[in-house]
Image (cartoon, rainbow, N blue to C red; front, side, top):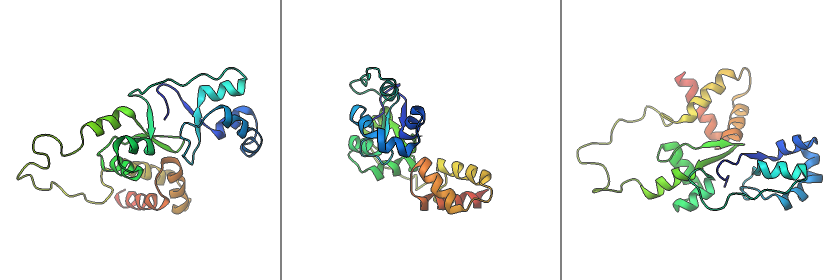
Length: 198
């Protein structure tokens, strides 16, 4: 969890601020740093830390505590959101793509959601209320013209295509996957669809 009003920082930026190359910092300095400053998402491939705590460590000053308790502005990753909703992390990501959940935002390639959005989804699941389900006679509604219609990532893919130059599409897809989450294959499909609809 990224606590409310506490910016996060990754190891590359910490190493840069320490004035050493990332590889050297990870080999020489990271073990001691990680003992003093806990990762915000310990099971994530991308390790993020509280910026204020990281700066205090680098400055040799007392490391400030993180805010206690839960707050609506806390940022949760897919695993934390999944635990709160009682679903899997992949379901959380799918909800965000399909519009059943706020799209969230990306912090250093980690997709996060405000706790208030997760709580809202948990407290108001689809189909709840009078009778649940679709009102009689409403049909299924208009069909999508393609699988990614309305997907906010389509705009990102289109922008990436417009600035990519001669970059091979699979390289571009890999970069987008790293920056925004999801698989390279999904971004390849998004790029293809963005190219078709341009």
